[in-house]
Image (cartoon, rainbow, N blue to C red; front, side, top):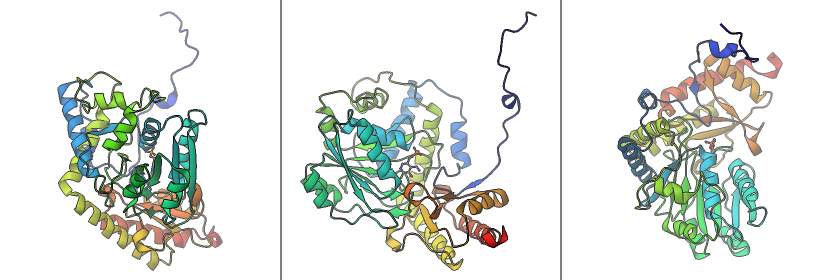
Length: 395
Ligand code: PMP
């Protein structure tokens, strides 16, 4: 045999079998994937333009229309995570000369503002932000911001996963429209866990993610555009600055424009299989049952946390996001010790804070199939153990 010319040997790690632990994922996502959805993603692949796959895409579209409560034709799943949908929304809606107003109530407003700034077609798309840190929803007079900045888009997060706040949306769509502005809502952390009605609430662009309540692997993100949003995109003078996320192309690929479907990109086909199943499970359970399940288990969790002597970050009960609960890191503890203890001793993931809530809170997610009374009890028991063992005086 000729001597090898390879300078880099095969990596030792890759020559070992893949072994992964089992964990209960009670952080802010991803959540655990039930067997039915795992089985869907493990199916043998088909070609991305095969009729069966196009049929799956049509079913996903119908599932998103149900989950979002919308009749929008331009409804599809982006091949990417929640961030990708956020970028897709902003870069298709905004163009040179536009102003976007970003409501910042945690990290997701900050991220949207960052994306808008980068996009700013190199600094020309105006961008304004306002908000409060902490565990309150935004109650600032939106009218002021709309009248003052005359934005063409208002961005707001429905379920702020960094703080555990649920933002009320009532009347906001109507208000935006009276100011000639489109309403863009992030529902990555809230979809399926808290009521949202895209058409009735006059939301123009709504997006979510697959790995939270939908219990699917990360990598596909439901999104939908109202007729108003579609018209704004059609009026664009310049093409959007991304080919991959160009909604004109994606609309065609998803059969939303009535034209024969053309190849745009090779879709993450197996992710679509699982997203289809995630949406099917939500449809079978029914949205109202799903909302009630998340409400009840979140209430049980909040009560249990208070019984342990912990302080909830969001004071007002109706401002609490039913999918993700933030609880203050108690005096005398380091959040990292608690999360590490739960992981090492109980095989449970919970998370620390993120962005503005970093160091201040622990975040507990109960999403989709993970939102059960049994999981609440298991977590409370483990947390009680952690509180006994992780106090600074014991370390
Ligand atoms: N928005 C919200 C409210 C989120 O909770 C997340 C994910 N934690 C995202 C956007 C970003 O989603 P992804 O991590 O899937 O890109």
